[in-house]
Length: 119
Image (cartoon, rainbow, N blue to C red; front, side):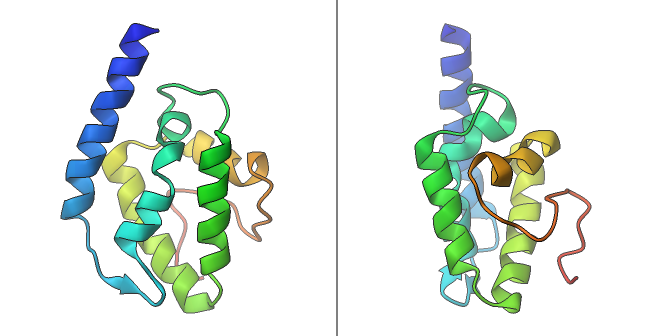
């Protein structure tokens, strides 16, 4: 258990450093940085380091992001942002696919690392 906590703390530290290197362009009402920060509490679940299910805070952040993605262009931009971030942060694609269902978010598409964000 102690090793998992240390690994999670290290992940958060690395996440903080890596977020600065991501494209911080504005995605209409939300920046890429803000999109990533809204899902930071999901890191233990998405990376498989800790929790077997997303936390309440994770789901709240995911719901908030989903609500802000209210146009096709914003959804495409957030998709591109999170697609790049998921590679940098080592997100487990199976966990990412489970997140919408576990957080009761109705998506019309499946989360997949090979998704074409333009469709």
